[in-house]
Length: 120
Image (tube, rainbow, N blue to C red):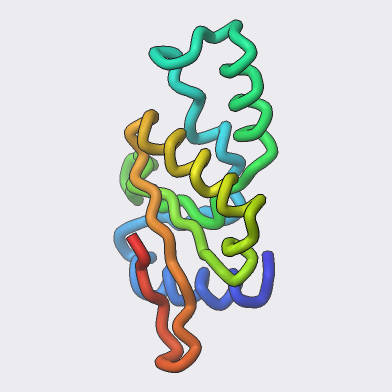
């Protein structure tokens, strides 16, 4: 976890810790699977997407305190998310979350106001 991710974790814990359990660095494939309506589970596309998702992690996952039901996943987008490889990764992750019915929110640190802005 980077220092920025640690700082954001503390902010999230303070703001939402009474309502949600906040988990960090959660492997994507432990939360969602590729959509079998779009890709047959033995197809090359399914396996390619599964391999990618199994190597990626959500920065944070918020779960309801009482029943651990997933509320949403959060990604902290820094300057690295402007690189072509990260833009491609983010696009694939956005699609996989949408297909799985998981709300994915992207955040950025606003250094001028020392706050966290939700991008979507």
